Length: 118
Image 1 (spheres, one colour):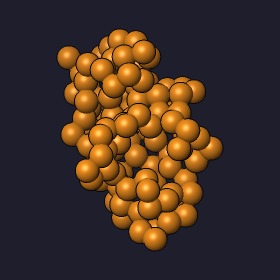
Image 2 (image 1 turned 180 degrees about the vertical axis):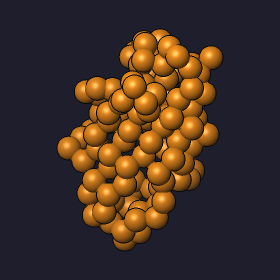
Image 3 (image 1 turned 45 degrees about the vertical axis):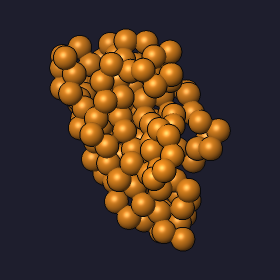
Image 4 (image 1 turned 90 degrees about the vertical axis):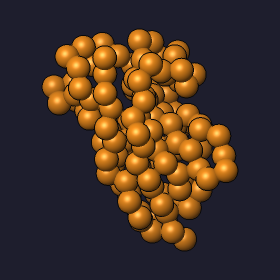
């Protein structure tokens, strides 16, 4: 069993940066594929990034996903933020990159709100 807890969200002006963190419990976390999704108001949840080289076109070149297995933590560095990045961001983990990218990861966090003002 893996529990995921996101943090680092907040309010930022357009062009600014935020770094989200996802802290995981479980000694086998390093064996899981990990990623981030987001859901804006009135929209479906959408893929953002998966470790290490999978990115949605809308965030390529601006967002970077990383992980520190020693700390059981996944990060999402978000630069050059735009108002359309406003959403609740969710961390997810699963046994394969395919499941994570496809949105069927076994584990999900509660989400952290990111609001980008224009």
